[in-house]
Structures are given as C-alpha cells and as structure tokens.
Image (cartoon, rainbow, N blue to C red; front, top):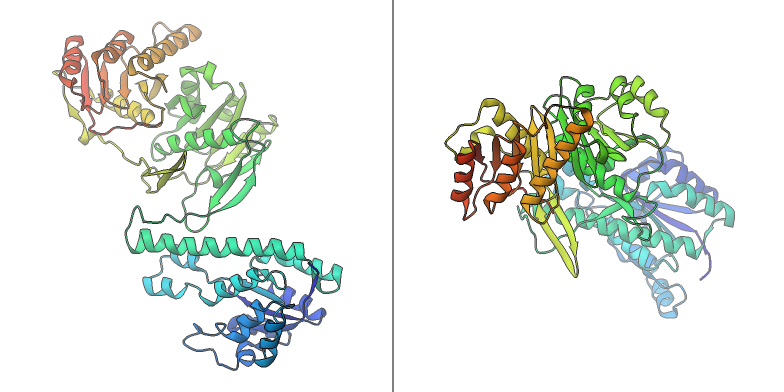
Length: 529
C-alpha cells in the first residue's frame, strides 16, 4: 500500500478542540476543506476557506441537520476503490469527487445522558451521519484516512509535514482500527441507555459493555500474565480506577485489586467516625474506628500486624501528618485517602515506593451496578452486593437480648464480614476488629483462625486478654452446625449476628442460649467468593 496524498478533507466535529489549528495545517498543504454547520462556521471564523456540505451534495441541510452527509456524493467519495475501473467510471459518471481525509467526532451522547437531559434531547444526540462516515472511511482505509480523536491531530499534522501532505498506509490502518473502536463504544453506550435507563432491563438480551484502556500494567496476578487497566466508556461511578497517584512506582494488577477491596470497605463508613481499613490479598486484616485517624490506624494494625506488613490501607478522612508518620513505621504498598495534608504528603515522600492515592469523594456503597466474572466459555453477571442491614432489620432469636454496645459491635462486624471472603467470621469489639477468619472451606475453621489471630495479638501487645473476649461475632452466612458457634463461644464472644435460615437454626439458637449469648438474625447473606 502506498501513501495517500490528501487533496480533499471532510470535517464534521462536535468537539471543536484543536479544529482551527488542524484546518490551518491542512490548508497549508493545499487541502480543500469541506464541512458542515457549526464546524464550517468555526473554520471560517478562523479565516479559512470552506465548502459547505450542501454545495458538495447539491442538497441543503434539512430536518434539523439530520440529513446532510447521508448522500452518494459523500459516501461514494469515501467508499470508492481508487484503482477499480468500474468505481472510477461511476465516480466520473455521477460527478463524485474523492474524499481523502475525514475528521469526525460524534454527537455528545454520553455527556447528554450524564447531565440528566430528557428523553427527547437524548434521542436527538444519537449521531447517524457521523458513524456512517466513520465506518465508510475506515472500511476504505486503503485510500482514506479517518480521524475520530482530537488527540490524534498533532500526529496527523506531523505526518503530513514529513511527507509533504500525504499519509502512510500504516498510519491509516491504525486510525481505522481506532475509528471502529469509537463507533463500537458509541453504539454500546446507546445500547446500554436503551436497555437499562429507557427499557428498565436489568439483564438485556445482549449486554454491550465497552471500556477504554487506561494503562498497561507491569504484569498480571502473576509475572507470566499480562494485564491492563480499562475505564468504562460513558457515564460511570468513580472509584479506585479514577484515583490520583501522587507518588510511588506504578500500580500492579494486585495493587489495584487490593486497593479496590480496601476502598469499597472503607466507603461503608464514609458517613461514620474516622475509620481505617487494612487489606491483604483482597481480605481485611484489620478495621477500626476511632476518635482520630491515628487512633483508628493503631487499633486496626493491632488486629493483625503480621498480615498488615506489605498491605493496602484505605481511610475515610483526609490523611494528617501524625497518621501518615505512623503508617510509615511498617512496609505498606498503597495508601488510599480522600485527601492528604502537606504533612502527610511530606511523611510519605520519604517512602519512595509507597503509592499514595487520592480518591476524592468515596464511592456510594448503596450504588447500583453490575459485577461481571469470567468463566470458561462465558460470563457470570450479577447486581452489586449493595445490601445494607440496619438495627431495625435485626431479629433477636435468643432468650437474652443484646445490649446497645453489642448491637453496635454486631453491625460493625457484619459490615466487615460483607467484604471478607467466604466463609467469613469477624470478631469485633468497641468498633475495632478483634480477629478475622477468611476464605476457609468451613465456618468452624474460620472462627478458630480468627480467634488464634486475636490471641496472638494479645500476646504481642501484652494485653491481659484477647479482644475476642466480650466481642460480637459476625458470620456472613448461617451456621450450618453449632460447632462454628461453639468455637466463637470458646473465644469469648458474647453476641452473634448471622443471616439465619439453616435447617438446624433451632440447634444453633439452643447452643447460644445455653452459653448465655445474645444472637440476632439479619435475613440477609453476604457471600463473597
């Protein structure tokens, strides 16, 4: 394939960024500019000569601009194969001139939806002519260059300057691939809007999802795997993917995964007291509230200081200097916070490899959305686990009523268990996790592991007793047998929160009554695999 000399360009853009500079560069190479509506006006305002699309087609723009580029003199000029004699004869017979360059970006559909426009305005911002020109030009990239992204203007200008006004085949081919991605993502956004917003279909027949690569990562979950971060195209919530990294080496796949787990959990407390979450391998190993972030951090760290080494920390308040100084005492991979003051930034600056992420507002834990998981040959899709349990939803099933403090600790432990891999057991006392057991094949072992960790912490810090003594214990799913409950009793727990629903609930309740425990059922399960 040879270079294509650009003689005529068709420009029709909704985003006018860089348009005047591009038009001037094309004009310097003697390129004839053809344009539509607002784009033509912007080019003329920049002092450039422009042919209106209506002069090219012989038809006026009509129907509020809906019909202006859908014409044989446009698409014939784009699709004609230049070295095909029959195509050339048709062009001559119908006075169709070749179009060598198309510069198009599409109506702002996503922005229109995001600003809360009514249905009629949203429909009006579905582009028809633009995607048609993009696809025609991209299909015929052997002869036509298609530019859909203003960030490519500089490279286009540089390429033409280097070749005296031509564009290479390799560049045209890259532009064509990008163009089809642009129309595919545009159509996917429209499909999503019709399915979810307009038709209220939670699981449409075809699930169209598109995302743009944010960055390639060093490797995936393991060094032999490749990985990249992708950001959804169109309206979407903010999260760890949008965080601003202030320092440290680039984030890895595992860093993103763990930081997301930490941020999602700490967001459950975004309206609560100062809270710190420490995560290791996507599981919390310490969570605590406190009068200050520093107090919360120390309490969270004491839950499992061994696992916290090399962990991920997320907080629900702007980071201050004293808390940052304390965090620097052990090796930490990532710290995520809504903001950080100058003293905190200075403290972390001494830890060159530590990544500091500024998230801004924390995500809303009650937001809707879809979770998508790969399986061999397909995908599993489910709604986000945005269920929340409040005190008035709890059902006391034991003879003893829980105290006010026990209820608070039950709900705190329950929230942490929601973000812990199943089978999850979480002990908590006074707004601090005492022990966490995660990802075991049975609930009894999770209860025992959590108690062992709590006992080790007591020995490490010289406490008189483990924090599990007098604690509340949460189980993410029901106790199928009484053995898991009895392990919690042995650890010193005095209150239990669990979903209930086992065929042996009576047996478990009886064991709780015999041990003098208070137990509440939520009626809600929080498995996390």
